[in-house]
Image 1 (cartoon, one colour):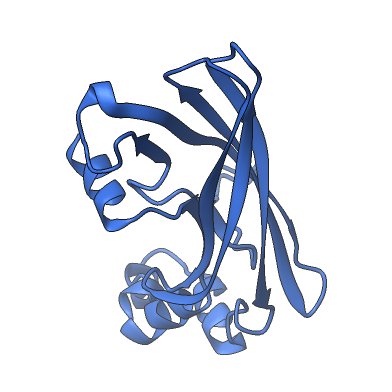
Image 2 (cartoon, one colour):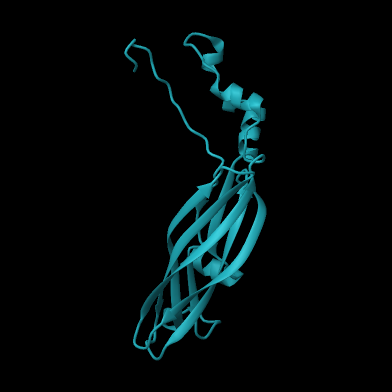
Length: 192
């Protein structure tokens, strides 16, 4: 409430920067030995992607997002030094459904002799055209126009209009990072 007794309403600040997340089922990777087994006794290495953070630079023509994450791994046998490489992806999703870019890379965890647990960090970068992540002027005006109680416009949420909702979705991006899993690995993650 302000000093004059008026209501403040709800304010949301929209950013051109994408939301960053790990999609469900892709934040863990389990490697079995033998590879065809799914018995817990056959688990060779398990890795978890965590501590996802991002920085975003939206000052230029490209919105550049750098995604940082940690990979925590555990192996069953502490024998000898070992490097285990895990494939991961970063995708840019527009409007919650359309994958507009995808890259696959690898992150390697090094285990010292006698060490069961190890960790490393990974980085991925995404690029989105600023013009694609910017709402058209007429949509922005409609979303931010002042509404007074009692007026018909105050009773209507602008996002109830399919054209406004569609424009907002079209200008909304996500940067998703996770392990690049095989079908069997994803199935294991979903059913365990």
